[in-house]
Length: 96
Image (tube, rainbow, N blue to C red):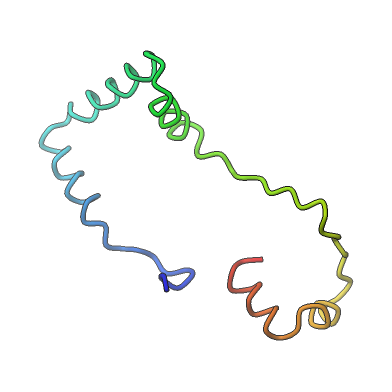
């Protein structure tokens, strides 16, 4: 079981260590970025994808569910009738 929804992972030891190292070597991050660009320019797809993900964010996966009918719920009573207590709790827990 993972962390509860809404909890914040405050401990990031690798992040902290990396930031400390970068403070003592400020040009290191620039050199790493330059290497990333060089590999992407050479056509390496892994580096191209990494670059795109860093600039635009990771692409959202779309799930086509046209086979599932969508019913417009008119009130909370209908929601309870359709899902029941357990179904509503599960939907609320997973965010939808």
